[in-house]
Image (cartoon, rainbow, N blue to C red; front, top):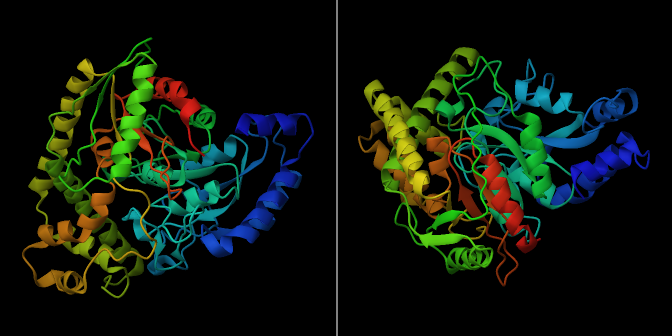
Length: 468
């Protein structure tokens, strides 16, 4: 059932907002004990809004939603970022993305689990614990929007918000069999405090069960924000026949599973049957350099974030305050000179230009969303020896190598998504493959900036092949 179907039922007085809120509460209470997807609830406030707020002139008429507990603040509710350092922090204002959600007529029922500060493609918050994959709770639902994905895939609610700074919408979409769009940089509401999240690499959106919901929500949320350093321009490229490049090669030369290869081969067959011109080709971009620049920018952003945190808490952040991964990111960021940050951002622009040229030949670029299906939720990503080096990072000169080693095993599982964050392009993960163990693996399309309409068109054509 789509959001449009639900709003129609409300309009027809077949359901009320309170009915939907109560049903969602029952679902959360029944399922969350196993999945650990929801980490904060506002049940009584939601009930009060459902009974007393007039939703008749809003689009979504009082449908309950869960929002991600990272970078999506609602005044008076926790803004912990999944970290014990902020376990008692309360948001002092509602950000513009969340305000737009409320203006559209959604009732915010609670917040979903995230890894600390969103740094991982799994969800293992030191404050809240591990989130689990609904289809198989031995596995992770991904990250950093893993709690949102698990809540949606388990039908706790009909819609969840998410965000994507390196694949954090698309990776959970891949693992959970959902539709996951990362919109074009500059297309979504930002502010009033943060306008260039991760230098434009990160953007808020949603995870959905249906393509229809993704399309509707994109059009509902699309905004021109004069205060934003990035603005959106729509590009219309609809055709009867698309030229589509595809690749299964890992851009960082790490192993790719047979599942990922099969997912793409199967999709290529579908596309050819639809009459599209599909060829094996990839852009002339150095994937290792993409990741080097991505880590560098994120390291500097992390250092800046923690310096501001230290001003707020009036003391230094220590290694005992945060996860070891977070600490390593912080210390690496402190070591980066300003000129290297400028060089990294210049490279992002060059990569964007290269992709624009690539899309002059190819309308779309197809890859697996992830190189593997969802790993076990308790998989160990760093050896004890590596962890000891991470603890000693303040005394080491090889900080970048240490950062690379720290993320290498997790990067191997999801190497395809970061490019779109670096270039600002839209990318969508579609649920087109499930293996014999019942684990999903998504496929990803990328288009030129502003070409969401094209992504939606090819997705609509492949919709008969979506796998639940």
